[in-house]
Amino acid sequence: MPEGLAPILIIIAVVVIYTIAKVAEHMRRSDKQWREVDKSKLREWTDDDD
Image 1 (cartoon, rainbow, N blue to C red):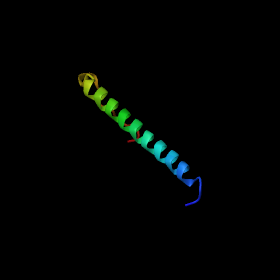
Image 2 (cartoon, one colour):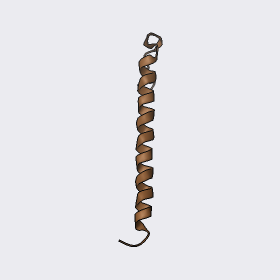
Image 3 (cartoon, one colour):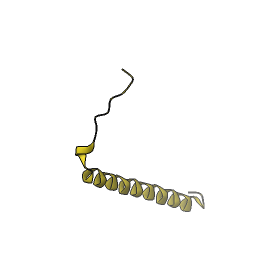
Image 4 (spheres, helix red, strand yellow):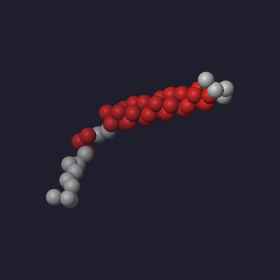
């Protein structure tokens, strides 16, 4: 393995892990907010493409 490749791979792995963790956190927050929303005030959406 060329010298200097290991730190680059470690940095890439850290960035990928961080990104996955942030996406999971946002998904959990979104699910929590969706559960807390007052669904009785939601309206049915109709597309105008018909």
